[in-house]
Length: 129
Image (cartoon, rainbow, N blue to C red; front, side):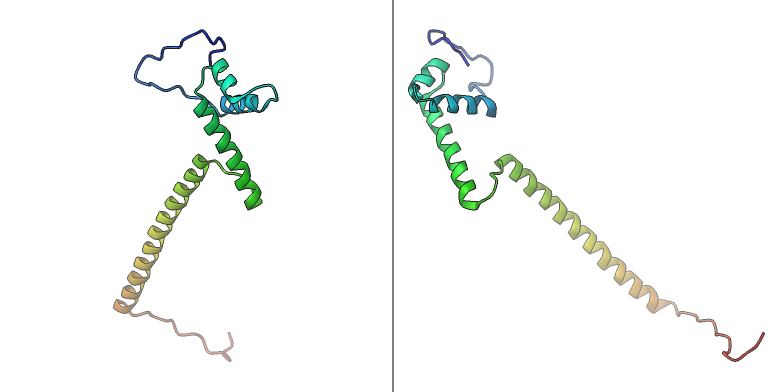
């Protein structure tokens, strides 16, 4: 983030957009909340688009409102997607194991039908040794 308002930053290469970390975004939004600062002033000082700062502020307040309404913690979208992917993987594995159990049950039933089960005669109860 440039701190000199007269400095021009030229982005070269394939990527045309700057990427900001969560810490950088939070620092910029917190700076706009300061009593003597406005969003436009912070945007000029830091070389960021004012509309981008307004969007970040809006997202942060919405996240806080969602947490208050749900009476719960806010979960990052990336983490939610990761957990959804894990659930899909576990459901797929459960389906595979269920299918294996069904196949084994059918095989066991078929095997019992083909081969008679031999039982050894038990010794008489009152026989002495």
